[in-house]
Image 1 (tube, rainbow over the protein chains, first blue to last red):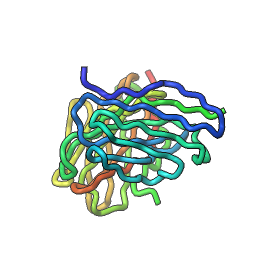
Image 2 (image 1 turned 180 degrees about the horizontal axis):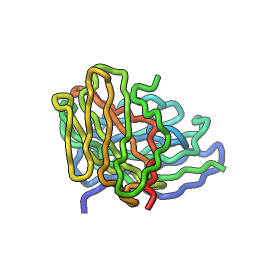
Image 3 (image 1 turned 90 degrees about the horizontal axis):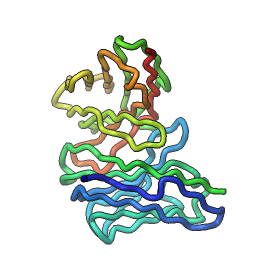
Length: 115
Length: 112
């Protein structure tokens, strides 16, 4: 079954701790994205990657870091520098080149709660 | 600055009637538009898209209309069903763009 998996579904961390959210896809997509969703707000882009070993900051990258060592994987680390990390985090992927009309496919999301 | 706007946070419609969800955008470089449906605590699922060379695209009960001069698009669901109750996001991108820009969503409730 092709798709995007995110783990864990729910994650709790203590204030001041770093935490890494997993995102894996077996769709053979080149591009991958991380968004966060807060109540009453749309999806805001944290980071995206068009190819392996390359990634770009989105609109709200501060306090987050990513890596793209493999095409299938795009983990997101929420660092202690992120001032308001409690949110619903969504990973997405997209096929084709930058210059193409292709939709993004989303994973099921991870709910991060900072205690 | 929000480049894609959904000004109606919520919408209630009777089962069997038409649901119309609206979306406005400000960036004239956007030429690809999408609608996603999202249930609570799940990822969005793609519904339908339209490129700027068209003004209408249909897929079953779902039709998206694009008015480029007004920078406005709408999603029509006919007939509406209770299972359509969800949050709907519109999104926009440009042909050479790296990003998709999402609206804040409209929560649709279809009343049986």
